[in-house]
Length: 165
Image (tube, rainbow, N blue to C red):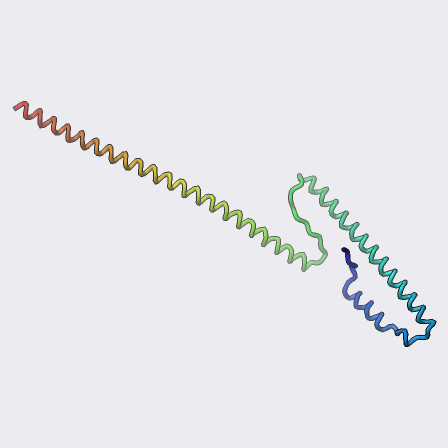
């Protein structure tokens, strides 16, 4: 549903013009029908004008969209958002909101990457701790075996000394 693109100031002026016009009770009967015809023709002219303005507006949007699509094809049809406005304040506000949304999205993406990296590091730490525990238990077994061998060598040396006496 399209609405007419009449500026607010122009709409107020039109409203004042109609309210300043003399009413039917102020005029003779012959002028009343002339005013009705004039009002009807003014309304049809306004409707026709609004229709032409809507058509021109749609034509402008179609041309802008075609131009954007043509340029996007040159760059491989990337995903993007384009907003057309001639209101500088609104454009500035939209740019700031878009930057905030982008930074919000980038922060979420960065947070997800950091959480993944943290999980990977925690998994690596757990693996290293398990390897360290395995190596520690292997070291304990080798020390026990070495101590057992040292005891056996000491017993053999004592036995050799006793047999040589």
